[in-house]
Length: 569
Image (cartoon, rainbow, N blue to C red; front, side, top):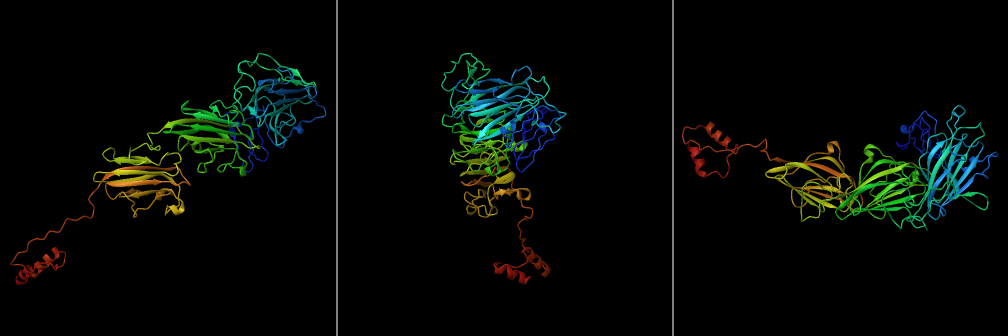
């Protein structure tokens, strides 16, 4: 489940506990019960490997020949919100047999974000055929989860890793070098920043920070702060790496998007295009006007998880969609890698929409980039683009053959999920014509053949009258092949009703209609004509001929005079 944006020249692998995703290169991300390889990360070169295995604790870095007494640095957000840190002697070669510890400590609900600008570590490809970072000079990034240290990345070689973010206000970086001959490798250079849940830089007015470099020693001789940058105009530190929307002051990671401010734009997972942080929940709230709907599509989507359920049982991270402030059970969660058809648009039922991103404490991925748009609907047309809206019906549309002899009509909000508790009427008026309807696509939630309230079904109903036509069956469920039979009216008037309940839903339907002239039936015969019989010269055979012309029998209503005349002849 790797991202296409990760360089194919890198040998970076993410190994996640028990989820094994094999790759012929050194790029893997494992996933509990299923194995997925990513060709986009394959490479024959040996540059960088990242191994975020929960089994790789910081204890694996210990060595009797290494000491951090002279190489420990603390970065406190109370002193500075962003800056740089490097390996010893950078950009000159770093020393051997060294272990450096960089501690980043934020305040409250701050997160730590780090990005590597340069990485050049010694790597012995000949003595390490297994392509592992365990016995190589490496950088290890760790976080704390419920008091336990978890490594989220281990890197060696020379390919820069993706941007990283902590799950809380503490993040540790350890740099380990082995006892080898002197190296010409430069080491690393990285930037950090504390991203917060409050607007601006906490406790410091915007624009008031001076250009300075803080290198303050604590009481134990350890350095506090290192290589600080100019922050007279500090970067935005309240966004979790999310660059759009207005942050909601009542939610730790919440962003609002209003159509009155912008009608379209993008939003991303936290820290995108870097790996999103673990144990994180972000809310994206959309507010449109009454006649607007929210449409969302995903140019890039890689959220670690096992579709289609994307739930806690499968230890999945996921995206959740809702038309309410509470979970909307009718809308499926998104997780995994979504490409092609699986990247279908998501549509809201109304002007309000909520998207929730949630990651757990076990696995991670690059996240997502989404494009949103507020789309105006015509009056209250429910997203139905054809017909003339009936002013006397909440959701009613009229189709006349005098306007168009053929066309399409759809369920509300198609191709998105149709709204619940909705009833729409499609009325057809022909001129000595019948209405013929076919369904290229049909997915209306329900249990055929009854499609009734007892089975909690949504359905489509057909009628030749203004009221229900009991001779015509309802449609529901998924109709394919032979099930998609043509529906036709008895005469020039026809009515189609779509009805959804408050429990379930589907994608709806797309229908094609056509008005056709009513033709004479093929078995229609002309009315029989009775020829006036001759009075004389007729035989009994002629009498039978007349009887045949009278449909083979003499009606009882024939006048008595005619019978007498026939007898006399």
